[in-house]
Image (cartoon, helix red, strand yellow):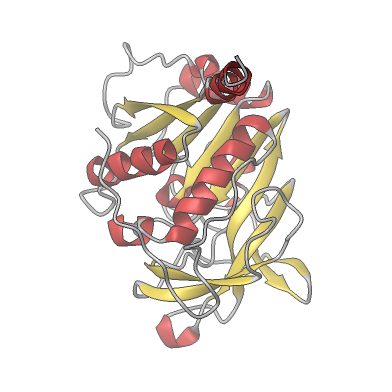
Length: 292
Ligand code: ZN
C-alpha cells in the first residue's frame, strides 16, 4: 500500500492537461521562408517540452478564398505564428484581435513580424516589424542604448539583415519569467539578425538584444531580438530568430520558444534551463526530427 500513494500522486502530476497551441502558418513570398519545412520542426520543439498539444492551422494566401477559413482561436491558450502574410479579411482580423484582447496568448516567430503591415492592432501586438512596404509611418526604429530602448523616427525602410552568421544575444531583462536563469550573454547559431525594424513599440519589454555589426551590413546598434508585450489582457512573445532549420536547431532558439510560448499561454514559466544551453562563447544545436 505504501507504494500506491506516491504512484497516484505521480499520475496526477503527469496527467495535467496540456496547453493547447495553434501553430499558424501559410503564405510567404516565393520559397524564401520555407514554412512547409520549418513548421514541423517548430511543432516538434514545442511538443518536446511535454507541455503543449499543437494543432497546425494553415491560412490561405492573402489573395485566396477565406470563405471556409474561420479558425476558432478561443479553443487555444496561445497562437504561435510562423505566418508571413498579406492582408486578411476584416472579420478575420477582428476575430484574432478580440482573442488576444480577451487574454489569448500570441507568439510571433521570425518573419511573422513581416506580416500585416497595415493592420494597426497586429503591429501593436508585435511592437516592431519589417518589410512589406513598412516605412516611417509604421513607427520609429527601436534600439537599445545606455540601459533603455530608444526610438529613431528618421525616415526610411523597415527591416534589414546581413549574412546568416552566429551572433551573441545579451539579456536585458533577467527578471522576466522567459529569461530568468538564462546566462546574461549567449550565442545564437547562424541566422538573420533582424535590424531596423519599425513599429509602435507600445507595452514592449525588450528581453534580449543583439549587436548588428556594420561589418555584416548591420546598423551598429543593439537590436531587439526577444520581446514580451501586452495587448489588452493578452500576452505576446516576439522572437526575431528562426529563419531556417539551422537557426531553429539552436538550443537558445528552442528554449526561448518553449519558455515564451508557456509564458504567453499562462503568464508563468515552469521549465528549467537545460544543461546544453549555449554559453557566451559556444553555439549549441540539437538535431530535431520534424513532427508531422
Ligand atoms: Zn528570414
